[in-house]
Amino acid sequence: MQLAYFSPGCGDGDRVMFTSSSATDTDIGDTTLIEADAATGQVSSERKIAGQLTHVVPTAHGDYGVLGGKLVTLTSSDKKLKATVKTKVPGPLFALTASANGAVDIGTVQNGKSVVTRWQGGALTRLGAGTEGEVKLFPSKGGDIVAGDVAGIDTTHAPGLVRRAFDGRPTGVSREGHLVTTSVFSEQMKGVTSKLGSPSDEGAGLITVKATATETGTAATTAVDASQQLPTGADTTSLEPAAYTAAVTTTGDDVDPLTCGESAPESQCLTSGGADVYGPVLSMEAPCTVERNDPERQALQPSANMVEWAVDQAVHGDLTTTRPANWHDTGLPAFSPQGLFPKAGLTDGDSVPAQVMLGILAQESNFKQASWHSIYGDSGNVLQADWFGNGASIHYYPDRSKADCGYGIGQVTTGMSETKPDPYDTLHAGAIATDYASNISAGLRILTEKWNQLKALGMNVNNGDSKYIENWYMALWGYNSGVYTDTSEKTGLGFLNNPANSVYPADRAAFLRFDYDDASHPADWPYQEKVLGWAEVPQQTWNAEPSYSKPNMPLANVMLNTPTS
Image (cartoon, rainbow, N blue to C red):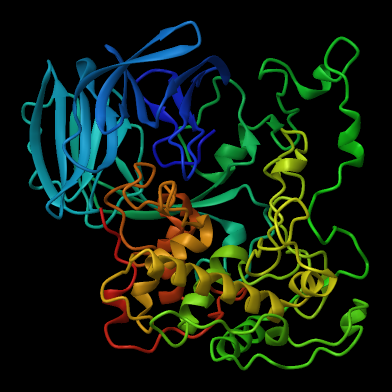
């Protein structure tokens, strides 16, 4: 399934639409539409269409979606989808909801406003506008709801669309629109996303929901155990934990995953009547230069203060402290971080701002060089996003060709795969894997390379001066997805992090600017905007302390991290 704010798409009935896109940085790919029955939890169909299909919603008069900036209706033939264009979407999109009598309401950003437009009877009708980011559309019983700054939106001639005035930015509404949700977060994140004390021992499933009654303005906070599975027909009208728990009969912790074309549990697939167990899986080794579980390649877990110190030294080329031979039992000869990975020169610039590099490390690894199981000052396997090329998922077999080989605090991939050109030697690869300071030094060189590549292509942000944090927008984009420099092909930056990509809501505020809860749904922002958000708003440690200093510069909170549509 696709991790996107518009998936799943729901209407008034039990039909639910999920999308899964194969888009890459260089190819728009195709989209698989997965239809499920919410009442039974069963997948009813999977259909495919060329291009990036988003915002699919079922209505009483057919299924709608957005393809190539156009509102389309969808029909199926065998396992393929056919799209019929209805109209051009009137601006960058943030919502599409099904309403009464087959109408659909469209939320777009136009001239700094959030605009609501209705499509019905072959025509578009503008219903009004409100403050950008403070007008939201949600599906509801019998139609849909527009919530937030709704004073300027006229629903008189829009049957099914209900207004719910609310001061602020709603994140959701109840089925009938009497409650507006403002925050949803896991109790295990206490002390990390907010200064609420120690993490809960209730488990990852306990979710705290903050909501406001639209009629009275009364605010309330309650908890729901999302790890529990309710029986069919259970009464879920109350969100109180005790009432919810009383209705539970089974837990959903160890549900057998579906892998036989999503038609049967994995255990059944691997019986004598199903597929054979894939033998090489058991002996598969990733093509990465440093293997997991190597006792001589265990990584030291640094504290936040150690990381900030290393970054401050590295951006000035002063991270030359000596690691003695056999440092932390690695068996490596003596080295220094920037002896191995010297500070590289910037085209038209002096140094990478420390805050930019700190933002990268926060986004890439939460300041972790070793596994999250390792505490500060201890050692463990180096943090690696995907050792086995299966998306770190239990649902897919390992695929050696897709192993990530991104190591440590900066998720350094350059030189860390034996299948890619110019792999690092034992010393350089070992230092990247085991020493956070060397990893930061290597990551800094990669970021500098992206800046210089973009300069060579004539691609600048603002005046192109490296000392201004916001001017690193495109270089950060390139750090994540690469800069394409082959002039015989398309050059520049990849599609996935394009701020105009429709997988990101067009009305989004700057990451973390409005609320720290943004960190609970990071897929709503491209990579570079998340990094600039962390540069502006320091990531918190387990006990709600800032991991690094906030940028000390005039207008930082105004200038940084403003998305463009």
